[in-house]
Image (cartoon, rainbow, N blue to C red):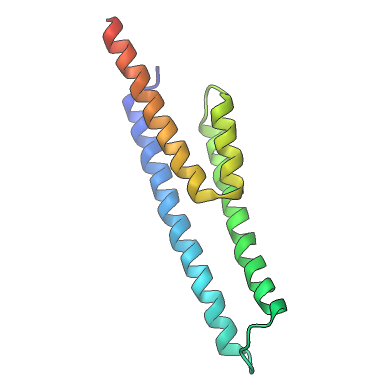
Length: 120
């Protein structure tokens, strides 16, 4: 069984990663639009420009999701199908994947802890 300190470490680590993700994604989203409107002479959002901005934001999110998925692969011990599904979700939607991973770890470990306490 995994110790309580491991659960707490994972919870803390992924909560921090989730907060960093929201800060980075929110910052880049507003910062890129601000740069666009400050440096372009005629700041009309043409479909090409809007598509370019959205591509940059999606690329940043995808790279972050891939990085978090690598952290999750390192952290999982028993290669369960549910955890692999969460990792795949994380690559495409990092915030949802991180929350599901935290819930999975906490609920799974609480369930194991309860079973071990009942059997002793």
